[in-house]
Amino acid sequence: MKKVRPKIEQAKQIINETLSKAKRPFVEFTGGKDSLVTLSLVKEVSKGPVSVLFIDTSTHFTEIYHFIEKMQKLWRFNLAREKNGEALGSIKIAEDRAECCFQLKTKVRRESIKKYEIDYLFTGVRRDEEEATGSVNYVFPETECVSVNPIVYFSESDIWEYIRENNMPYCSLYDKGYKSIDCVPCTEMTGLKPESGEKDNSQEIMKKLKQLGYM
Image (cartoon, rainbow, N blue to C red; front, side, top):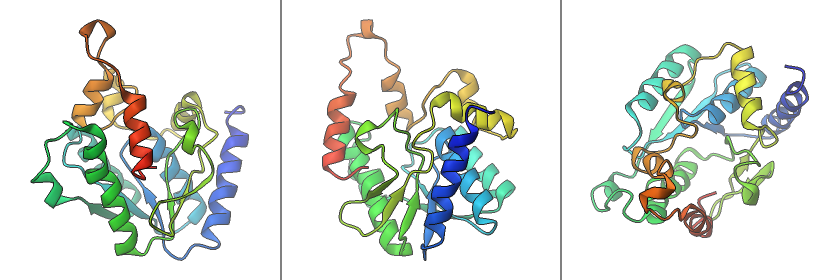
């Protein structure tokens, strides 16, 4: 774990500095490996109850729901589970991926920030995945809440090294071959092969999402 140790210490320093000034800090937990490591680090540094936000799009894998429930019981964090029920009754899931993410994720996050008066939200963003938002701090549009990304300098291999070395549980979907886990429809879309004839417009979608204030 020598290679990742400096990054772990850097992440802890970022977390410690944030907690020293935060009044209502939360960790956004998706059930995925990156937010799992972020939650673990915040839990270790805080040495007290951690407030966790889970944005429930109602389209997650069953394994994700089971894993979040398992971790809540194991780590005893305070879980806030929020969803946009109104949008779920009016939009067609994944038909317009950017609009779907905005309604079921971005809008819910903004409303949750206001509801719980969150001033700092720890997230699992890594720079090698999101260069445009891959900074330590980022202010969410239309809010005064700061997104704090303590694992921003971790690579995917660093994440798995941390999980293995700490003997941490993780979602079983990774053992089934999934590399990145999102909602069921979009996870399936990202796995399409080139010969399927489906155009990969992920970059265009992410650009539109950023304009809408996704991250």
